[in-house]
Length: 59
Image (cartoon, rainbow, N blue to C red; front, side, top):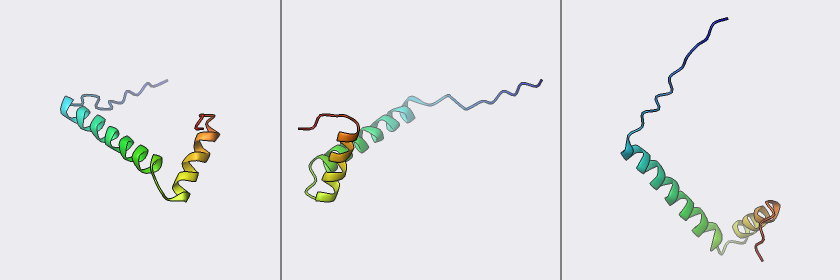
């Protein structure tokens, strides 16, 4: 039996980690802001149906 080791390059700089976290936060804020306060019925209803499917109380 042969064992193969693979290096995934786990050395990520702190600046890169910060940018990843910042972009994830901005994406989250955009999604919550756009979907949560959208006046488009299709977007609002899709988010509303998703919340119900995940058993999240929304009203």
